[in-house]
Length: 399
Image (cartoon, rainbow, N blue to C red; front, side):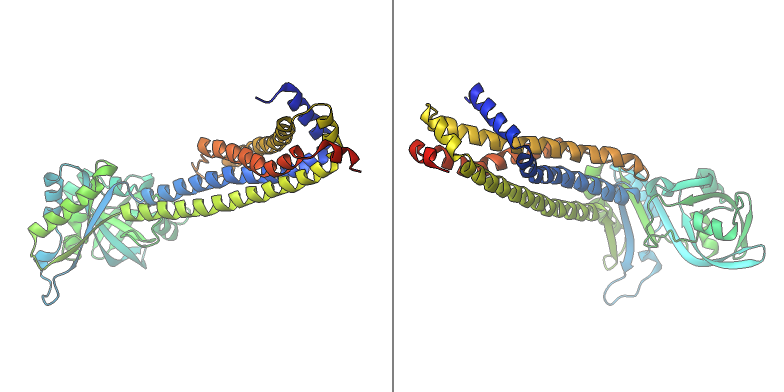
């Protein structure tokens, strides 16, 4: 155990050299703050990326018809249908919701002005699966689907183009030969930039009315798993079901967002590791600084060490004193760095957009403190050992 006298001597030595101790501590402050901040930024980035991906729709499995076969030509029976959707709903217990869509290019006419749009036919569960946000009015409901009512909803971008500074709900639009009433305005919760059936300028109508524009087969079939752990099983079962219901030559693409989520997690983990390595390098550099400063300190305090040894201080006590000085410098620097690293996210979180949170990892705080202390003691051992080995007679003669 380190005695009270050793603590007192070590603290007195640091107080006598406040500027030198503060400058030595600065590297540890930066290194420990970097470790906590790096982990905090990595966790925040990971949560944001995963939230963006999951914002497209949670636990989604989607299927598309790709081709009939290498030598065969496609026939209508190869296409996905509403019967396939109902078979998935009834035949796979882990499925919580299903939906189907079909999109075609079309033109919309408002007060004699014609504009190209994407016409999208959807079934009832589409909004829930895709997490679409209704901004005005309502989305298409079960009554719209069952009664084939000529109601539609439009995207926010299309609303701004067709009805600037006006409420489009209740207005009539002409889509081909049919006239529709706008009942709502919506947007995607997370923009897919045209990589889904929803484009910037889209009109969504009940799927049952698509037969007036084209064949009413399904372009994309969606199935939503009840739990995240069911996604892989549902993906496999949907693929098997489609194969059993169609010709063996037909090829269907059945995918989920799990691979994209895994890729995002792997990228986040790799970036975190790289940044933590950089933070550790900063701590190593600060440790080298501690060692250099303390080597100089040992040289400057050679006569003091000789006097202490001459009046009875043992080698162990001298070693403990200098190790304690290194520990106090690195430990205090670690605490200050951690405090700074914790305050920064707390201060900037209110300025961040939306509900983006900045999680602070307790593990990173503990690791930063322990590594800071270990760095100080490790790099402080060489000068401490050198001071402990000094001979009293040679130390007293040192000028």
